[in-house]
Image 1: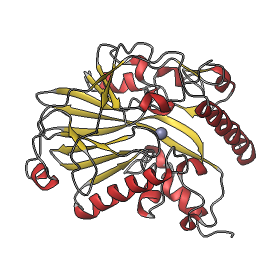
Image 2: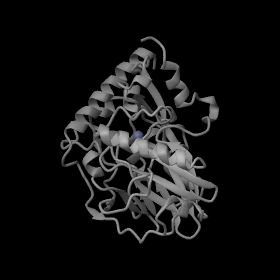
Image 3: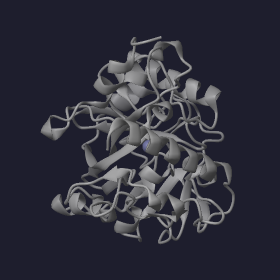
Length: 334
Ligand SMILES: [Zn+2]
């Protein structure tokens, strides 16, 4: 796709997403919800948590790539982005496999299922299927990568329910426990008619377990945080703003703590330059969430940060890291 057609396409897709986002309400199908039964927390400060690393490991899986407009990733009104154009950027679609020796496998976000190998819109129906916006190599789909590792997640934790985070769900064990922040379904691009964007990703999910942070104590400098397994290994952190009910995760892993920001920060560039995502449901909330995550990393510099749509290491095949693509635009022009 050349630059012009890709930005035309991106604008069209943004219009579709905006239209879908503007007509939320009932969806084609939304699973019933129940409150996540949080176990008693094993610690009340991050110092206590990190004093006892768990035996869990975490691995980030790239399940394909999606073309998005830069103004979705970054608030282009922010002065730090001066000179950036609102062009199209290709970003990885990630899922994170947590392997816990006694509690089994967990997945954070689901990436893309196998349908994206042969189609640029995969399992996204409605008018959106007129567009090609994803790429996936054979074997890159979430199920193939889990199979290759002998992994079978019994819990699926979503950062939020936007399409690029739910699209792998149909290929997962539908008997797993599906967990997301309270209110996430209200911000899931599910439109009433299914005409603009028909999503069937959650059709097999019998119940969505909602993380309710009301009354949960903040774990400073982060906000309210839930000890998902009750042993200090996996924490859900309330980071709304990009979407309603957005959740980031901290894994107290064997190799050191890992912060999975989700789309509270899509990119390293945004995180390091203190620029929140362009696409938000609550800008003040998005700024507050990003500020808390940045303060957390300043307080605990050993934390490895994994951004919502950027690999920490260079992608195989020498693909240009997302932040390098972004920084090329900064400072150019006016
Ligand atoms: Zn995303």
